[in-house]
Length: 318
Ligand SMILES: [Fe+2]
Ligand SMILES: [Fe+2]
Image (cartoon, rainbow, N blue to C red; front, side):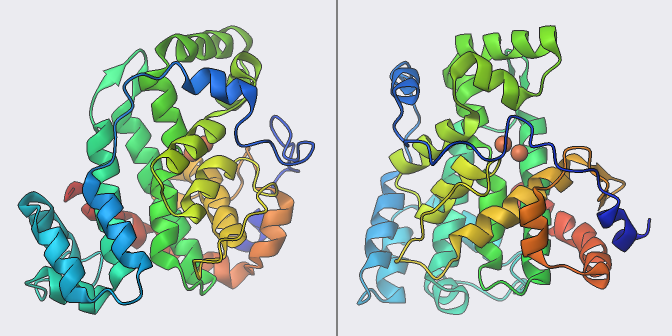
């Protein structure tokens, strides 16, 4: 497939349920409050997450100190060591202690590893309940993460790893909806089956909001870093986020654009290569902003297969 021409041949963006809505939605709309009120058994993140976040906010925290905190959880220690020694991070078999891992890979990598491990544990990976296939959900999440990472490399972003994690977690609202709001999820599925609209449109007609708002709510409740909150909330409406977090080097707007594009491309993935002629197109403003020329798309496609393999090995180790 010729990557360059395929891009320009992409059908015009139709916006699904409308890519630009009037103004930025109140993060705590009445609909959202009423909905999340029904959730009684939301999993919590381990206390370790809060400890790590607190330590990371203090610039005086040393690698030894963070290492000591993580060392109180032996299961976590072995997972972190397994991951940081995997091909994903590029130091196979060379890191033997948590402190060494922190020194070599940095505080935020360790936080990302712990975060991903905790989130996956909180929601499980292999069950099928009320028609929601969890394994398929994680496959989509993995592909989105890998493609987003590949796009971030192409764009020379300085938050490549965070882009992967954001892609991996972008649809958490869908898993909350299916597992914790079963009656509402059932209605969404029924509307979708009866009318043939997309899941996003069905969510909007039944709930007056989407899994984006639910995911954003969850991310805030879990005190996840702001860029992740914004990606979960706005990946279907990439032009609506206006928040920049002064505590991070990550360009949140860019991160949302990358995950939005990766989400679309992952749904069109054929034979390990994203098909750029996507029927659900990338927002044209985002595509223009990504500024990836024809050679860039060729490189991106070639790299993506490798990224998917690495992402798979990352997830297999959790
Ligand atoms: Fe989504
Ligand atoms: Fe998605």
